[in-house]
Each structure stands twice: as C-alpha cells, then as structure tokens.
Length: 187
Length: 450
Image (cartoon, each protein chain N blue to C red):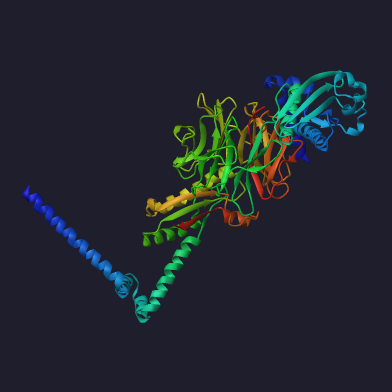
C-alpha cells in the first residue's frame, strides 16, 4: 500500500514538472516571437540542403518570415484550388490525379490541425438523383485515397453536390469535364 | 427517318399492348383495334350556362365556369371542344333540361356530348344545375345539382372540377385527376432550389418549402398530405418530411450517412424507402418516417455501389430502382415477396427516374441516348420501350397522373427547364407552368378530396 502511494506520488511529481515545463515553453513562444522563429530556423536547417540553408541565413529575419508565410499561404491555396477530375459516370481516381492527391496528403500531414471537406461534383448530363450518389462516390473515393496515403479519416468529411454546383454551367465537353470533380475545402 | 419509323412501329406495338389486358390477348387484338384513345377525341359542346339573375358578377362567373370546364375537359386529352359558332341553339335562353334540347340540331354541330348548365349565386353560396347529354343516342346521361358554400369566386373552380369529374366517371367509368396536385422543384435566379406545388393543370403555383438550401426529389405521401424530399438544410443531403401546405412543419428523417437521398413512400403511407450511405455504399433501405431503419432492401454488391431512386408498385409487392451494378445506371425491379431482382432496361447506357404507372403494368423512365434524355414507357415485365419524346432537348423525371392517362415531366425544349405534360402515348405535349427560373422533377399526387 505504502509503496503504491510512493509510486503514485512520484508519478504526479513527474507529471506536474512536465506540465510546468510545457506551459513555460509555450509562454516563451507566445511572448517572444523571435524565439519561435529561431526554433523554426533550426528545423529548416536540419531538413533542407546546405545551399538553401546558407541563402536563408543571409536573408533578413523579417523577409524570411514573410516568405514562409507566403509559401504557407500558397500551399494552402494550392491545396484548395487544385481539383481532381473524373471520367463520365465514373468515381475512379485517374492515374493523372494521383500526384495531386499525394501532394494533398503531404500537405495535410504537414498541417495536422487542418480538417477538410471533400466535395463530390458531377456534370449535368445525368439525373439529379443518380448524380447525388455519383458525387458521393467521387468524394468518398478521393477521401479513401487520402486515407490510404496516411491522412487520418477523422480529419475528413465528404459531401456530394451532385450536379447542383457546376463550375461551368455551359453545355460543352470542356465544361462537363471541368464539372466532374472532387473539390477540397479547408474547414 | 428510319428512327421515326421505328418509333411509330414501337408506338403501335405498345398501344396494342396497352389496350390488351394480358400479353396473350395482345396478338388477337392488334388487328381489331390499334387506337390511341387520345387521337380520336370525343367532340363536346359546352354552350353558355344559364344564369338566374344577370348581374355583371354572375355573368362573369358563368363565363369563367364555361371556360374552366372546357379547359379541364380538353386537358384530359379525351375531349375536344366544338366551336360555339356551330351551335344552332342557346340553352341559356331556351332551357337546359331534356325537353328543351333538340338533339338533331346539336348533331349538326358535330358534337357527340352536350353539357348544359345553370348557375345561381346567392350571397355566399353558388348552386349549379348541370346536364350531360349523349347527342347520338338522344338522351340525358346525368343531371346533377352541385353546391359550393362560401365565396362564389373561390368556390367556382372546385364546383366545376366536381362537374368535370362527374363527366369523366360517366364517360370512362373512372374518376379523373381533378383533385390531384403536382409538386416540383423550382430555382430562381438567385435563390436555391425549393419545392413548389400547383394544381393538376398548373393552376396556382406556390412555393412550399422555404429551406433556403438546395431542396430536391419531392415525393408525395400516398394520401397527398405530406411531401418527403432531399435537402441540404444541414449542409449535406438529408431526407425530410413536411406537410403539403405552405408553412407546414419540417421534420428530419435521416441524419446518419453522408448522402441520404431519393425518398419514396410505400403504398401504406407509413414506411418509406430511401437511398442512404450508412454502410459505405449507396444503398436502399426501408425506414420509418422517424428515420428508424427497418431493413436493407438492396444488397451490397460493391464498395462503391450505387442504388438510388426507389419507387413502389401500386400494390407494394415490387420496388423499382436505379442501380449501377451492371456498370451503368439501369432500372431494376425487386420482387419484395421472394427477394428476386431483375433488370428491366437494356436499351441504352443510362436509364433512370423510374415511375410506376398507377395501373401497375407500365414503367415510365428517362433514357439518355444520342446526347439527350427522353421519356420512355415500357411494360414492367420487360420488352421494347416506347419512346414518347424526341428532338425536344432533355426530357426527364416522368410522373403519372393518378388515373394513368397523363405523364408530367421536365423538358428543356425552350432552353430553360420547365414542366410539361403529355398523354401516356406521348401526344398532346404542352407546358404546364410558366414561372421564372428553372423547374424540374415534377411529381403527381394521388387524386385528393373528390
């Protein structure tokens, strides 16, 4: 009994110490932005090649910050703006879109806090009812593909818009192929 | 040209089929009678009604009554109105009862049936006395007194529709559809799709749902009191049920699953079927109006399977639905007693929107061929489909009138999609409503309150 208590006490002490340490470091990041940057820089140096590291070191801190923010924004925009496309009456992911999905999965892994909605869309050469189902299949298969690349399923939801939200409402082959898409939205 | 010929042949064959009770009788009857009942319309004379006291208001009501009766009878497709210029008698002056009718003089007008009437308006009531005469057999088919309590302006229409139904029952032995309504989806230029309703003839279109979210696939409950539909009220497609009157409460049926769509009522009006994704694939389930799943109705045939658009036979023993199981969307029929599923459509690569005829023997559907959707009708036991629309844009989502004589559908023949109606043989196609925006997915209710 006494032994158990001692173990518990030791555990609580350790946990408390950890908690204090964590909250302190958090505070440091919050109150001192420079410290945060430094930490990031170190990370960059570790992961990128020597030339890039040298370049980065030469650029003023502020500029680097801007650049990184811009790059992050660009990656985020690219994630949302790049759709994948489907063949008529098909929900199969096309080979030509695998690279896009891989890039999306990478980005999602780099941004673990991000949750997304995968939208499935169809062209209007079909029936409203059936296209609602087809849109669901397209979104579900795109999501399953991302999941197979290591993105946690609980970060993703799907919604089918069937033929209700065409990108291009004109009746042409070009418009139809643009409308048969899965679209990725950051929630 | 060849196609036209094929359609004509198919039409004739199917007409023969429709006219026969059973397929074995079809062969015998082909030579005897190959007739589209809507081709030889019965000529009807509807001369001006007599009015008891001739105030301007009463005169106006009497004129409206005649016009409405003429339009309603013509709408059925069974009748054509004889030009009043051919009338040699004016029953409103000389009398509406049998002893005042000179059948020989009416015969010369070319009419086979004659309707005479007298209207009396007294305060908040309207009384009509009406007679239907068979001009050839020189006899009265019925005489009836109809009353409408309340504002004469509001009660004239129901009173005349009651008269039209009496004429239909006398003429065909069956009730008409003058108490039925049509629900459809309408989209304004800046508003999402919502469900609207109107009378069988397009009268008084009014917005039913105010979901401010995409709302689709209306389905009338068998008694016409409720409409089930698919809506994005919660940012994803779910099924809802709402009373069929403006301002009625909306209740959610489903929430689980990503895509819950295409509700249909069983003939008992209690249970529903719908396509849900609760087990990953898009499959059809039997559920209560509260969304309680009772049974899965289509088996899982693939991880990415699609089964949608259930619709039941009038007796409820079979269910038609659309499935991708053969690779492209086709219509299948499941026998609910033995569980057997049979594919119905084989013609073309995209056949959807099954609509079971109220007579139980026909299936109307939309088939995609040569870049366009067209309405087809075929025997539910299989065989060759009869194409009812051709060369008029996309024609989709057929739905039968409660007596099975007409089919309402959507068409893009004038550019923007609108609601059209035709008879079950494909003739007499005309626009039903004229509204701004686009109208789709019409569904015909049962014949109510008559």
